[in-house]
Each structure stands twice: as structure tokens, then as C-alpha cells.
Length: 239
Image (cartoon, rainbow, N blue to C red; front, top):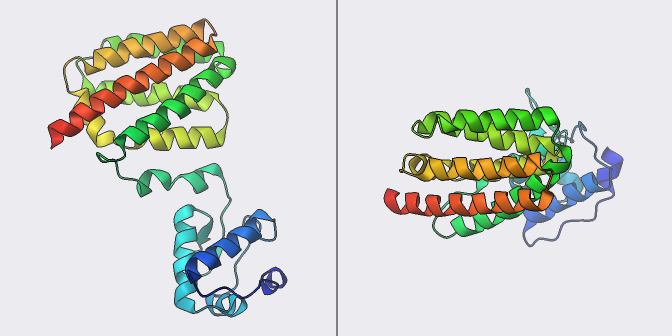
């Protein structure tokens, strides 16, 4: 461990914390630092990198936010498991939905969840599809129950996401899903919105039943467009 770190060249003085973080990330990428590896004490690490301890602390805070480094109880820091959940989990906390980025969010959701729906047509089991069909039947009775519908909606989308068996796709899609939830709560209480979501879900499930990836992607993208519009209306109402 110390040998790997001791070979690092001195850090340039501009954006010191960023440079430190980059050098540690490079060690992770090249396999010199592996999941679970304990990092040297702060004083030793700062000396190895030839930076001040405050600059090192700033870099470590950034790496902790990214999920690359974790603190161990009792002191010390170590490289995380580097699982998708660790690395992508902070996404939903780093971005606040506002008038400037709401369009970008739903453009992203259309691209990601549209692709997820396409992949799901290949990987959903018959039992998964039967479960989605049962959810849609249940949702028909929940169009006047916003809370109940939102609970079922999450389960619907998680079932589709999980079917991809791709931890990165799952985590990114879920992180985008939870962004802006406060506005979708308002939207779900607007007359007609849940009926539209129900119709969208029915169309998505029909594409899964037909094992038609093009239709599934098209239906999911259309659903994202409808959710986008109702979210915009909810944001205006909240103002």
C-alpha cells in the first residue's frame, strides 16, 4: 500500500484537492488500491502526496461523497466496495430539481428508462410479466388514491429496472426516478394524471407481453413525456 502511494509524483498547486482526488482515483482504476484497502493515516498520506492536510481532507470529503472512500468507525479511511450502489447512490442527493434542469431530467429519464424497457423485454420472466399485469389491474382501483398509486408505481418501475440485472442501469434509473418526487406527489393529486399513468403502464405491459422491444421503448418514452408534462404543471402550481 505505502509502496504504491510513494511512487506518486508531487501534486501541482492549482486545485490541490482535485489533484489529490484524481491521483487516488487513478490508483483505484489501475488496481493499486483495491476495495477494502486501508489508506495510510492522514499525516502520512499528506506527506506522501506532498500536500497540506486541509487539502487532503477536502479531497477525501469529495471521494466520500462519490462513494469511493468510506470512514471506518474508530478512525481511518478505506476504499469502499466500489459497488454500483456505493458509487451512484449520491446522485439523487447532489441534484435538486428546478426550472432550469427539469427538462434535462426527463430527457435523461426518457433515454435511460426507454433503454431499460427495451432490455426488459428480453429479460423479464413470464412470472415478472404476470406480476406487472397484476399491478396494472390493482392500479385501476388506485386512480383516486394518490398515495396507493405512488407506492404501486414505484414497485412497477423497480420491477422493470431490476429485470435488467444490470446494477449500474438499475441504480442510475432509480436515482433519476426519485428526483423531483415532491412535485410528482403534487401531480398525482391532479385530476386525470393518474389515469394517464395507468394508460401508459397498460401500454408498456402490452409491449412486454408481445416481447416487442421497439414498442416497449416507445411506450416508456411516451410515459416519461407525460410525466414530464404533469411535473411541469405541478411545479407551476407549487410556485
